Length: 296
Image 1: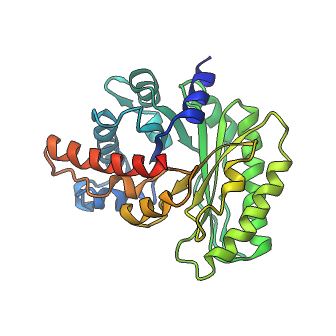
Image 2 (image 1 turned 180 degrees about the vertical axis):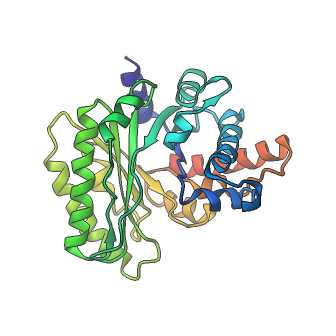
């Protein structure tokens, strides 16, 4: 019952998905951008305390509303913690009607064949079973593509879809994220191979199966329309990939049917040192800019 309500919210909502899933490797930079330097914590537990405080401040802000933010991607540590006395995912769905997702990948392997595939995801079944004890709707996993290497891109996409099928078998919605690096000198060539490979893998899904796709904003406007319209794709969301918020939103507006799933671009300008009002005003402006770009 809850899954179907969440499905309709993602399918029909005009808002975007907030990516608050920075994990171990990216957390120090996230905190630094938020005004929390490395000398403010002396171990991983203290570091995650700091980043959870930041995420809770965002999530509980009144402007973080379900009309504009239809979903939020969480890191496992965030799922295991509480916000306002409730498990984070329960607070998001029950109190704010925002659909929670869970990042499930364990980071990237070494670069080979112009790509980085995912490291093996140990104990994935156990993690998915735990996610289902919360109102988690779906998952997210990330790979990166740097060069238009056919073998490398096929390896990335095949791995993503193999794991997606495992996630689907557990009754959860996978977000497949084969990111194309925005600094690739042959970004459009990568996108050409990627789209073809994704379409081939979509055809291998059962007729009653759907996935979501999280893709880098393309060089050519409307390039992913075929994926947006595909019956086996619930939603295509865009990552900001290192673009500034203004640049990412400008590119998103040129791709009708894609919605944002921004991380750095969402939290740009937020600081621990801001007063609650300053923080809320900054976050509200960010949310509204991304929402308006996602509505196009």
